Image 1 (cartoon, one colour):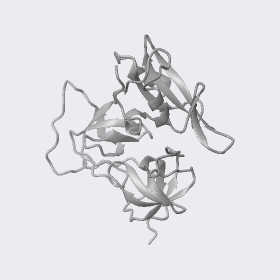
Image 2: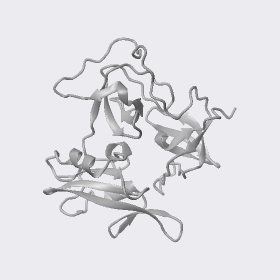
Image 3: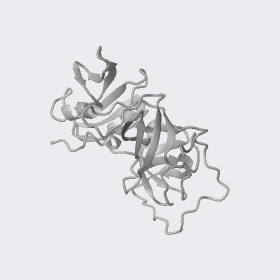
Image 4: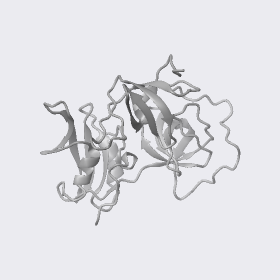
Length: 261
């Protein structure tokens, strides 16, 4: 079977901080070999794990993030090294790991909204009661990253959703968006009413493809000047004169600064 996925679409294959047991629960029901996902390593901070449905087993391949003598970050799996994870996945589209190559990302869990949510911050994903959302990653206990049917990505409050039942599909709400009376949103570390351009703290390192000049490299602790917040979750910004796009999940707006004007 030919591979059917875009390695550059991180939201299709990256599942965030899953453990081995949670990963197996996702992959074991898959019938075809070659279904995969990438998760964060639970044992080595900063490393990743490529998890693959193979013939009669689930394999977990560690991806080490290393820095070579020239100071360049590389991603190593076995005896192979790559400039980034998309390049690694592209390689294994046409090369076997053990018993299979990579065919397609695993199916993502879906959740249905119990209430309307307008969103309070730029990184939030608004939705209406009955909307079906695709889980991207469980970043925090009360806040997850999800994607809606239009492809917009953002954070949602976990108490507002429940597991989607395909045998009992919801009827989307036609009412104006309104949140449940008396319900208090879970607290989230960001500020309201952001005015752009605004400074944000990088909370997660990001090493983009060396040949894609549109992407912005992020180092943890950097301050990025956010200039545009696109609804697809790819924001635009600048660090020390370098401009580019980056995933909104890698930054948090600073507490005491919401505008540079």
